[in-house]
Length: 68
Image (cartoon, rainbow, N blue to C red; front, top):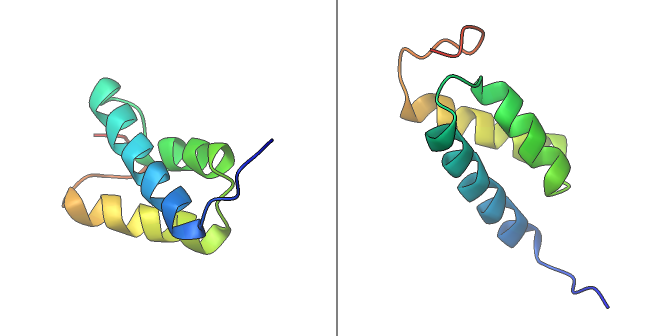
């Protein structure tokens, strides 16, 4: 039997997932990681956009396309 989680909990878990994967694979593009998290946690496009803004704001000067 599945348990229904609030959307905010899914977003929090997705953010944690993105952070963990980013630490484990620093060369991986942040946009790819967020796309994976969006699929894994069934996030709507607005939530995945929010994650993208959050994680690109945390690393100023990081180029989304180059992954550096």
